[in-house]
Image (cartoon, rainbow, N blue to C red; front, side, top):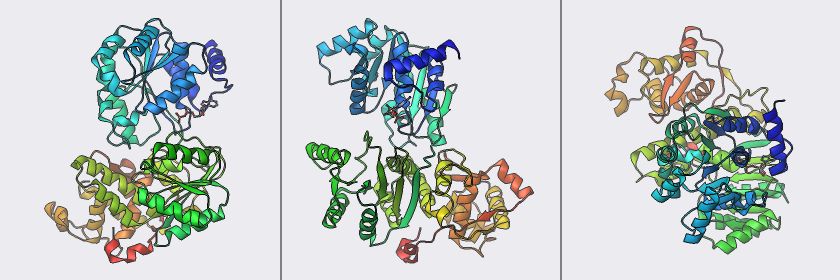
Length: 529
Ligand code: ADP
């Protein structure tokens, strides 16, 4: 063991009382201590904060931590103050401070007392702060929740776009650490580019949560009674039920209460006192279930949440992962049940109309991934992890059996020829279409876009019309997961063929496919995708 290793363990024990690093923490910390630009992707609860807190405490100078949430900054500062006799060891710099408080913060930084300075991006942009920080010793700059920099993240903040420029002004050689729990390849690329750290050492933890069971049920008009039955079967266990609207939250909480279930509502329309009370009741186990909008959950660290139910499907798989991730934090059972109806997707699409076109395109592309996940009959875990750029072996991977599709497999059948036809269609139509047009080309259904490219005159047009559109849609999803096709994100989902796909055309091998679920609501004409 080298001296730095011994040191780091000692420091970990000294400041945080832990005897072991969690996951990739030690490697990350070494990278920071060695002044590398560093990129950390870990799921929530992975232990990201310690990755920058520990090096900040042991290095000379002040580390600046950019974070979008004032409440979270305050919690972190309080926690750090708790481990040191020096009150000034951590500070927040924001617009709520009065003049004498600001003076104190600046004095502590200048005197080398402050090791961690938390700032919101807006405060960092202020000229007087930039000027001040230029003149003091900065150990490194940590950008927390770095996905806020990307329009493809679930929480885009335009102020994050200026960070690179400001950091450069504060000091040219300050190492930059980006941290996020959102890990689609596109968001990662955006972060590295926008922070100007394409050379960063990247540390990505697995996003697999092997103890979580994933299940999708079609959403019918009986959804409330289905939920009540589920909760009763899980009597006494803690759970969260997410709904899209406050009204639904109220109604469902009432329905649960009427049925003898200890449940409370939680949404941003309730006054702060009631919200805190309901949250505390949940944490203290005075109630079992919180029915909530997505306002609930940020910073809630209840380890034994046993189920998370989505009454309404979320708008992206990032949100779904984040929200389901609140189940089973202690490693015990965690059942993630979502109700899916295509009508809800249309509702979410409607919410986006009126927004700038690019934003709508992104929102639409993200929703299509949710549809794919909900309708697929392949391993849900594999689908989800593929979305996060991670390979998962559905036979031997940890948690492989933990989803409804794997538990109740549909029959598979040989689709080698269909895959070849699909790949050729993508390739020979010059890789210009999104999945929907590829399907239309296969089944020979022309629309304005197809006509404008004269694809209807192509010899492959309609070559797959012996199969239905849903069949081809399912096949495209499964071929995407194998990596023979890929979706081009810049163009909001144009499907392209990869080298692996081209090889398959030359040397086709067996490809066993399962058809997607065809939920009853598709029988209703008003509800077709
Ligand atoms: P994230 O920011 O990635 O969501 P946190 O930094 O909040 O995660 O850490 C999650 C939890 O893990 C916290 O309760 C923290 O105290 C704990 N933790 C972090 N590092 C360690 C460690 N080395 N040993 C034990 N617990 C740790």
